[in-house]
Length: 299
Image (cartoon, rainbow, N blue to C red):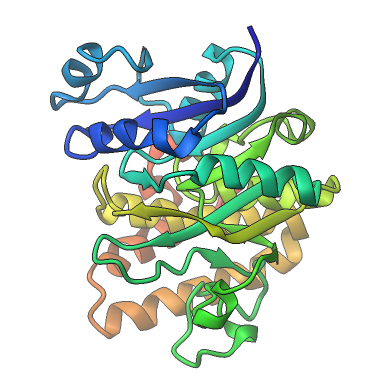
């Protein structure tokens, strides 16, 4: 049986948060028909025990072969649906959020819709992003200038509905036709950059990403843990994405600038940047899950 929305969630040691997310779904969906599939990527806490005790979701137990792989697995386990709602386990949806996002998707003919997201303390979570460029190599910028920062910080940019290049993937509604056209999430990223890659490839294929402030959600962030390893994955995947989109020559310059940016962060006291620097310069030290350890310029 077909549904309006196939809700897909990937958990990894998410017992502190996933119940609140699941309990927020009915009010967010309203009269829409939906399914909920949760793929657990090998949690070692009591996430699975919690999920098995619930009746409001289908649970798929898996090894941890990455966030993108888990999401694609959840989609395959879902019934036929018009749309796919990608959710992080540490998010919570506001009432009517799903209905509003679907209305925007239909009205705008978009491929992806992102809602307004707030932090746990109620403050705005800046989830909108500009596309990767040489000038934005660090992702963030103390200058605040758009030419040097991917993250969009100005609160005025979160007041109106508009197209964006990409948005953080904690809460995204995706037209199933868009998902199929792009071929799902690229599993080679394992963790981080998969939503960047997905939104940009969708745009290449003619599917826009639209932000709407009319739908709301909360995202705690870091619900599955953050470490020096995951930070290293984030930076290496940024280089990989840039290489895949621009070619080896430009990516070589981007790689060099990434090394300089991480060196600056390390000198300024960002402790995780030292291990990231070592992984950038010594491919054998890169997280093996990425399969990016065979050459100095990550593939």
